[in-house]
Length: 209
Image (cartoon, rainbow, N blue to C red; front, top):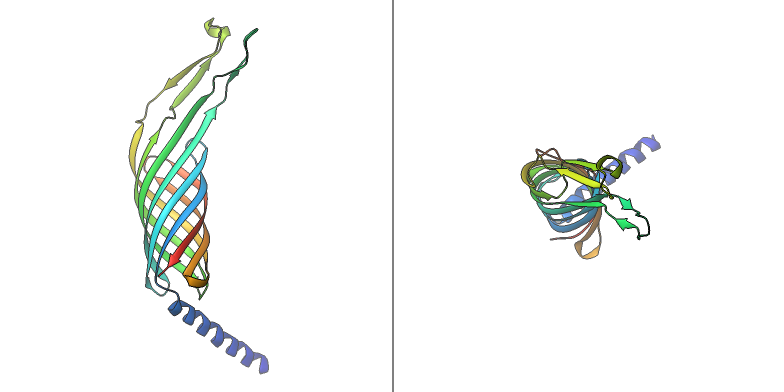
């Protein structure tokens, strides 16, 4: 009997604490994120930067809008050593960069006075520019008779694209004194241009008000 009472009392206290936490946390927040992700089309690693405004409209539901930038780069390494000459770097280097604006709906599975974590689903639009050629081929001297390798690049897709975006993010945050928030998120992003940014991990810092 005592154990049952303890469980009931503990549950009531837990519910009260969670309810109090929901009421005490301010319903709006601005934050900045910095992280890394891999662009799956070319397996390119790069940086991601974002700025987000979030507003709670139900005890465990929020909407938010985010402006984000990404930049990924890579190379096809090619080092050439000719007789009696220093080694030359003839690598092909490329960069893919983009900017996007997205709207998201968030579900806050746990939202207490300090802790806040859950999932966000969103859609948006993305502008992207890339210098990565669609087809790349190297012809070596044995085939061409030329003393150094020759690289052939073919472009079949446009350099600049605008695409629709769908994204999923898992987030975990902690609110400190003066409503300063620090957290982390992991996400997956797809777009109609065929690009996939996964995995993506970011750290965030923000302010509730």
